[in-house]
Length: 355
Image 1: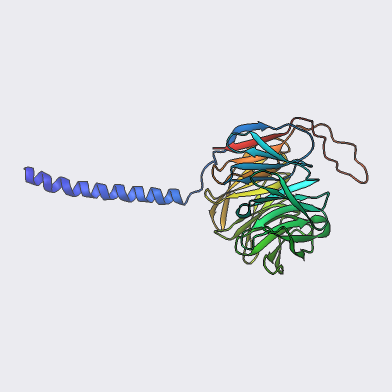
Image 2: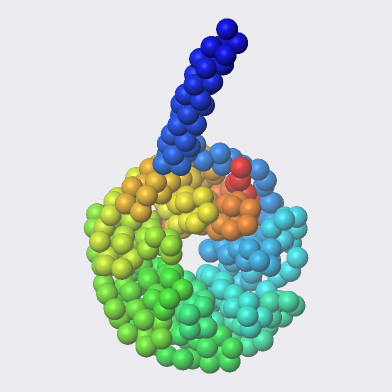
């Protein structure tokens, strides 16, 4: 009887274990192929920086644990872990963006009103020098492939290449349209949104020669741009409430994703495969890259009106948004038919969203 029982039970147990293992493997495979149901992002902190005046780009140096905040005439530097202000970079008239070249211990700001790029020491935040560029530099990025900083001059539809080590102009490239934001792929190609052309221009960061021009249709008037370097995908957010995903090699439009109104920045987290659009209406659109050719809107998170510029910390995956409280808009004039509302002093904040 004992021998018969053993002969019966052991095969049954073996079959059950095989079925369980197969079931768990199937679940794991299914889970790996699924996009998350929600992003889990929510407001975790509010940094009340105050002050007066406007702002533009935010930049996170994840290695140095710093957040750089452009404030019209100066740049506020914040410790991303404590939330404390740790320094200020003055005399950046009309500052738009910030870039860092850590290997040279240098930072750079694009100063639109002065048509210049300021160079500062990353340790002390003290100025090192200034470089004259063409009219109204806006976006600014560092290209590790060439060790050059690129300032994108809206007023002259051009980009200025600056040797990050010496601080000298390496060349200028005509872009054929107004550059809004730009990204480097790390392999020697720079991509820039041209908002007046509704297209992306790609150029060689070594030779400064135009490689391609790609239409963003059905997107119109692009603002923020970000790249998924691993899967060769570009995410361009546009004023007509669309995120356009492009193949970074041939410019093929892969898909158009609905986003919120008033976007000015795009972000991508390669570890979580999440793309973001910060929208001035007061929302954050979160998109999951299910595969290089399939994308899903995970959720639209309420933020605060005016929170349209953004930066992502690659280490904590936190998203930083800038905004303030607003008063009434001035009366329209022929020169300014759509004036922006006034900013209430001392209400400027950084919203930190995380999990």
